[in-house]
Image (cartoon, rainbow, N blue to C red; front, top):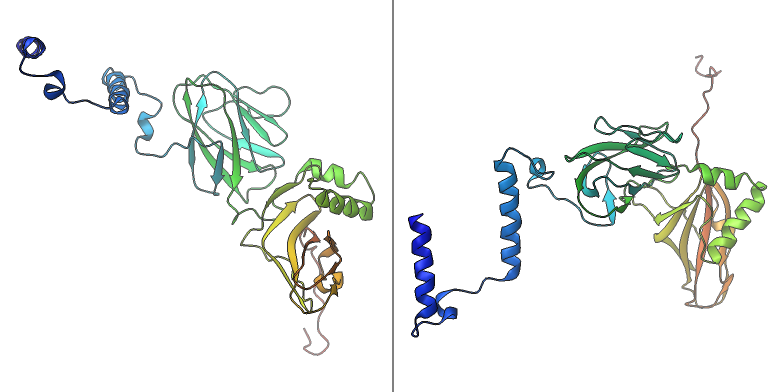
Length: 311
């Protein structure tokens, strides 16, 4: 009480003294500093009363506020979510599955609970006031798992897009049932033609996902005389049975050349085309579309004994 009285006395003396101005006596504190100090004071007050804040167990960890979160399998990401409201988590998987011990539900049969799955979207609605966690995988595959910690806060509902790091976005890994249905809705050749037509118009086929060409997969190779063809900074569109690579071809010769699709041929190439040019003058560029068949695994075979080796 004595300290408080002394402080008040000094304040009053400064206020009535004609020789000392308020600016000289009291330094100006920025509003941002005061706001931060007030927030920290509230946190400490709550914790001192024995009640932990949602963030208290993760002090020092980075909580991402971004709407698009780059995910690396096996690396946990922390995001804020609205408490008591549905939050929309858009996953890179076509048929996601959730594993969690802190959230109930997780089915796609209408009985959702705290977790509800619709197509490639996971809805999370929890009233818990402490962090909750979950792993998200492609249903039927444990090759990639995305680890997510959600910190409930009193904020509006959020929509967060989980984007796989380009190094891990492997073609054919996230097979989408919608892409499979769309591909099978028409004959095989017509499906490829429609894909190329949509790409030329700037559209993405139904159920397909588009990313930059990952560094960990081998793109198509076009051995075309007089033309430089590159997929390094291109695009890759992943469907169910097909993956389409989009690259650039440039005529680096001194004469006009017609693009030869056969120069991009390989055992898994389904079709090749270019847009908007088929014949390129020196220095001209065009897009190259290469549709590649997704490998579904090798069938088991029996060994044939060699006639030469005798085994």
